[in-house]
Length: 410
Ligand code: SF4
Image 1: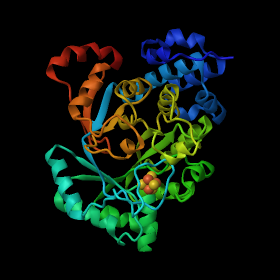
Image 2 (image 1 turned 90 degrees about the vertical axis):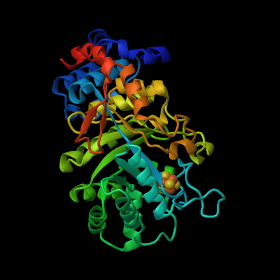
Image 3 (image 1 turned 45 degrees about the vertical axis):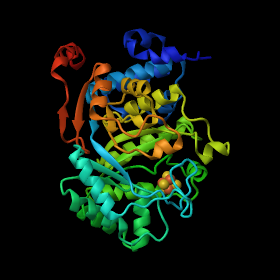
């Protein structure tokens, strides 16, 4: 019987050395972790070995976290990136009814809103003036949306600021746009691309297993549809993120299968920019109040999912993002020690997690990100959406810290 690790052991795992913890591991876990450390490639793990890692407990869990941090240092280095962006959730009216969502409203509820195209343009301009390089646009799905509304949003943004990168529309919104226009999926995506769509969020994935999806949201797109939208977007030259929502009704086996599926898509298309684990925020959701879910992820689960992603996706998707809006300051830093290398976006007006009960705030300034990153001895850098450009943001008086970091580069 494996012992439970305590909260304080989990909080202090970054001080553990591999040479110490590796001696305490069960044989199977030790050999799997050594294999990934040696090859820096998650493809060396069989399905069974991956399940064993996903169920790691006690010292095995601590070993998993330490190994993930080592693989992160090899594959992503010591830099932690973030993007300066603004979230624009253009409406909260939605007919889909996902039980984990506390953001959406029925059309007759008192606090609905629908931003005009002018307002979207105005918010884009403001964001640009504040240094944003990206707008992230997603919203609810209102019935009777005008046929080409998603295209018109892109035009409004580009008219306001032609240089702004547009990261927009979940696969669910894409399926809705196809339904509204009657266009074939590839033509629809190409039309959006030609009107300024830069990248697509790989959201609406939650857990890519239809049984779980049915519990979370009976009206949501199916696993097969999600995969089809993502593959087609990649083929049309539109890169996407990839996501997984954990801490509700799923099991560790679902994490493993989803990460392996993402690996398969990546080896075919190369279109994923990053993987973003999204911790379920339960407080204000129907899913939780109907007794269908647990109370969100435990500390061990938060850390384990980030570490598992780093190991299983190694050499396939090498950017693992911490979704700071779902986590507090200290937990987001711990996840950066457990395999993650990116902080996501500054967001400026985050709404979705806040409505569900998250308390991390609606905006993290670039300066806040920089100090969070420097506090854990890593190097902050602003990136663009696709990670093709980064600017190191190391204050001059931290040069001493930079020298102290050299050992980790070696
Ligand atoms: S998650 Fe998206 S699709 Fe589902 S109810 Fe909320 S806004 Fe609608």
